[in-house]
Image (cartoon, rainbow, N blue to C red; front, side, top):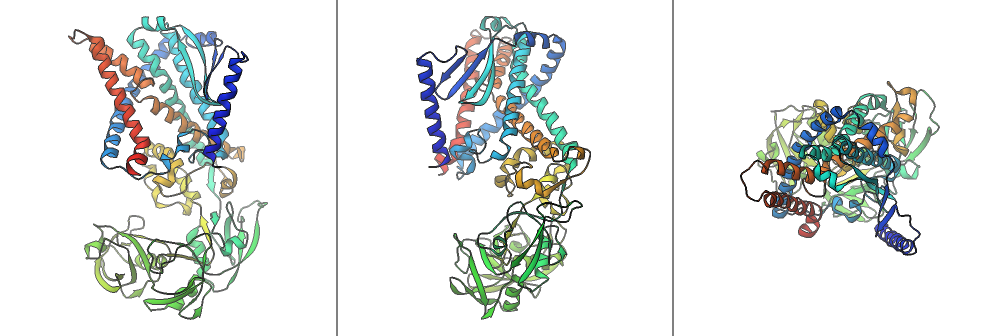
Length: 604
């Protein structure tokens, strides 16, 4: 039984129990249940809101500022959703993880992008967002002379989805259009304020107090790999191999390639001034396996539940990647002995995509299929690592012969290299599959975790572990905010694992140093609270700015339209207002439906 089915069963059980309690009069009058949705009403707190609302000039000035921002965002949201809806109709994309049913539920652990490990921080962020949002409505009700009928929480079973302030309908009708507009904008204004404060803390002293710990962070080990057999797994840091210090994935590969020994001593979680209780040394017995493969690889191998062992090349026993390359030598083809039999393949760097406007394509190389680079400028290339190494020794503008295997033949192209944007070296304009000939070969078997990249993306010092995608982030605060918002969706947008926050085993990849070091590991908790507080409040604010009823944006649209139409020489202003607001609202509803369900229905 999958998770979503358990959730549906729980919702049905909750609804039935609530129905029975209501039928027998066991529910208090302040609690109202409709299916899985529950509202809790109260009249308490109105005196407190009256007291908070006393500086009326301040609150009017504050919400006037928010109203201006909301109007701009409303126009942006309208255009964004309209353009996206038209695009999906014309070019339906393939369904992705975003379109899965469980990801429409704001439930940590059920939603793939809201990890259970930070459920308390997510719930706290949601509660704060709801309180400040509806509190803003309540305060501006009293500022504008609108009575409050009741207040309360809107729950999905026991999970808070929203808070509400129920204004008195008669006094709301009697309020000015400007007063009602400010009241509707007060909630998103407060959400934006919480977002700004949380991001300012996160991008400032909090991330400035988080440093990347020494070593290569391990996201996990391949099943059946030598590292897995030695007990190396998620949350470990490899700090040395055979006595050679390791800082990141590149230095790990260098340390492994520097020795032919089958047995290597691996230091885990060391390298810090204070002894780590998880610090240990393990022995890894290296053996060569195929841990992954690209579809259509020349060996026609596909990795399933069990890895594929590679035991010999051209009859020579091999245990390591270095041994594999040495056994291939200058030959363009090799007979590889695997646990699934022998196969003869061209050996080189497997290209999954050739950019149509890139240097290799400009030299006449094919762009409609996958090819293998076997040599550059006469130097043998047996893997993606070899290709990167050879290109590091070239310069932009240099013309070099590039030997490719394509469609059963070896062909050579004279390529004028472009400039690699990450290191300034020579550039072919291609995407590579790691390993050799479309096979991910490893004699160790760990997957790295981009610990430094996350810190760099949040504005901190990611050190040598930071990937190139973080380079442009520090250019503006808006870029940093954008990146922070997409980090929970990083696997879809940035091609790295989704960011869960600084939790659990992940915390082992970082150390505390900086202005908040006196908090110790509490800095991680503060970082998670700030991150999810800002993320959720900004999502609430942006969603409520959609110009469609019953969202705040739809209500602001109505009062704004009434204000404009009242100045026009029309005989039936109410009909005009209703036509405009209904048309915009239906357009937004259809656009949202296309955005959420379109890829599954139209692109499936």
